[in-house]
Length: 156
Image (cartoon, rainbow, N blue to C red; front, top):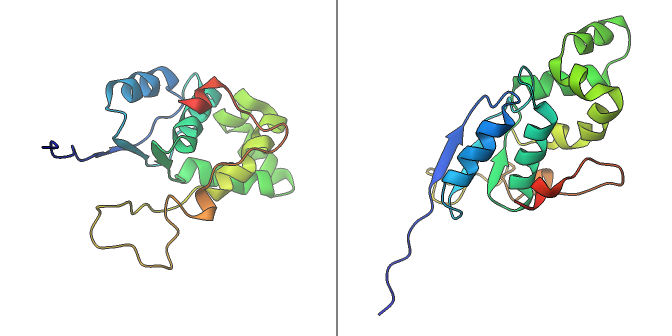
């Protein structure tokens, strides 16, 4: 007789804000079958923003998490796509931009821009309408362009 399967759970996590050590410890504590829903704002404010981004992206790529676009990710994307002094002022005030610099932020631009705005995974009610991109849709798939930041954390 086969024992009943243990259902996976969703852990909703918000406002990582560059606290990579805390995210790494949390991910290690939670069962591998469980899914993390990072509700945006992985970036800005904290001491290890790029490492937090790499950890979050690694969890996404291995199918363990979905990273939603928060207001901090959206603001960075918007500022990177703008031209002129207003964009420079916005970027200068952004801790992610200060830590990563222009080149590294632009390497992340395509990924940040493609982060889904909502998540409806299996087992959530009501079912996801076909018009809403979900975690498995092309908008959220992992891909790597030459020169795009990737580390061993991506294999988590």
